[in-house]
Figure 1 (spheres, one colour):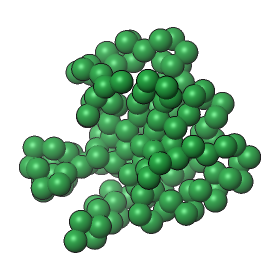
Figure 2 (cartoon, helix red, strand yellow):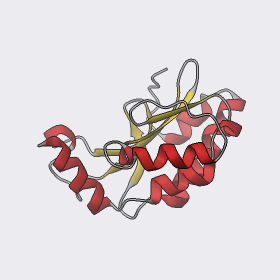
Figure 3 (spheres, rainbow, N blue to C red):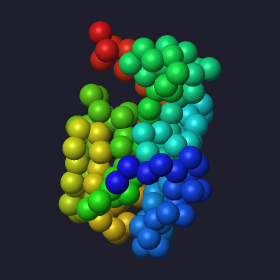
Length: 147
């Protein structure tokens, strides 16, 4: 479900209580572990965490008005999801192995982890994955992948 909310607080307010509590719990973990320089806001109808244009003026896909996405958090129709672009194309093998060691079932796409309730997520691992890479490393990996 793509939201038209203009602010994170507005996005959270429009969620049913159970989903709001789950999204807020994951959001708190993200905010606690977010690398310096990454900013929270709304992007693509989700709560987005991006590299601001003042740090990366090239912009996402060369769009000079679109900040580079780092992570996102969303309530979709049938599940909730955390999108961690930092684990795509380099850290995904580490992440899958660590997730498996928690005993929880991983439901993962290329860079998103889908969950139906907060108990499905190993929050410590989510925090570690978010904080594992610096903005500089993320940009280097992004540019390398774009070539």
